Amino acid sequence: MSKIFKKIFPLFLLASFTISCNTNKEEEIIIPKTKPKMVEFGFNMHDFNVFHDTIQSGDTFGSILEHQNLNGNEVHDIVSKVKDSFDVRSIRRGKPFTILRTKDRTNKIQVFIYQPDRLNYYVVDFRDSITAQKKVRPLTFKTRTIAGALNGSLSETLQNLKVDPSLAPKIAKIYAWSIDFFKLKKGDKFGLKFTERYINDTIYDGVDSLKAAFFEYKGKNIYAFAFAPDENTQKKQYFDEEGKTLKSFFLKAPLKFINITSRYAKSRYHPVQLIWKAHKGTDYAAPTGTPIMSTAAGVVEQAGFTTGNGNFVKVKHDKTYSTQYLHMSKILVRRGQRVTQGQVIGKVGSTGLATGPHVCYRFWKNGVQVDALKLKLPTSTPMDSRYRQKYLEYIAPIKRELDSVAAVSAQK
Image 1: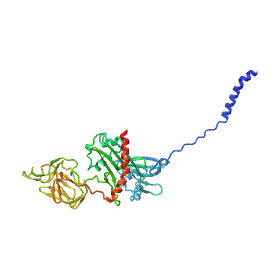
Image 2 (image 1 turned 180 degrees about the vertical axis):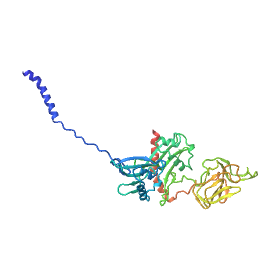
Image 3 (image 1 turned 60 degrees about the vertical axis):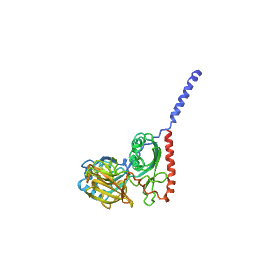
Image 4 (image 1 turned 135 degrees about the vertical axis):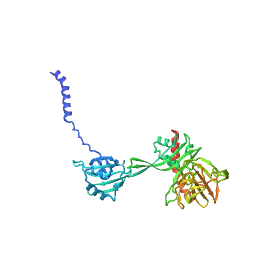
């Protein structure tokens, strides 16, 4: 018996231990999961039956409400109540709208939300009393600094760096007087510091502005820093690392695409009059209708028609300089009007004594016609000396950051 007991005793102990463990096992507590809030337009979407759609051709605010079991009289009453806050005629095809309805059997409309763009939206609330409000989603700005080397066009390079390529034309405009971007080469280095917009801190809304940049051009880094010398207007301009403006007083030509067909000359055979005479201007050929730009800011001194000039405009820029633009097909400004640099003042044509569509660009200095292509044109008004020290202190850390990021990028 003792031998049998010795054999079964360990089994008895094991069974007892197992029973003891099962007896003392703690019950698992299960905490029911709750749905996280999904807040949009200031509403918890889980509280409603949500319907998203876009405005279709032929849709009106009234027709949309009528599909929500509201009759004509009710719709007319709603439109009357919200007209001061929401112009129901402003809804456009393709724009999104959202309807929030009750989750019970009635499925009754509670809120109508219309989005004319990603930032703004209108809320028509039907719950207590009918109200309408225009609201703006919170907009935040984030600054980013990048550097690299050109690999293809500027737009392609930015896109590869996950930067909105719409920044490229902004950069080209800033550097219009300093860099010919068609002459930049693969491998040319650059650095950019810019701000980007975000809606609700998460939805990307594009590039807002360029704060600073440099581009390697013909072996030299050309810097640009945004700065507002006039504290009253806060209008920013772009200056280089020494405080010199990037923007020249005059554009190089009145057309974006230059095709010179005849230059300033003391004697030239006139193709229409068939005589030798002075040609005191520069001819730029272009298709009829091509925009003609004022090469500098100023006031329109003359705008009209003569037999020789055809339709023409003359702009006085200051006490020293004036420019004239001849043979227009259409004049887009009037006498006495103030124009900005680059503003379109007319369209290329062949009016007056012209054999084909072009603009004859004439230039006056101190009342005397001169050759604009040979004239050393002035830069814009330099930064006031009282702002220069403040400017240099402001750009110093920004320049260090650009150079530092560029150095790290070059080592990769």
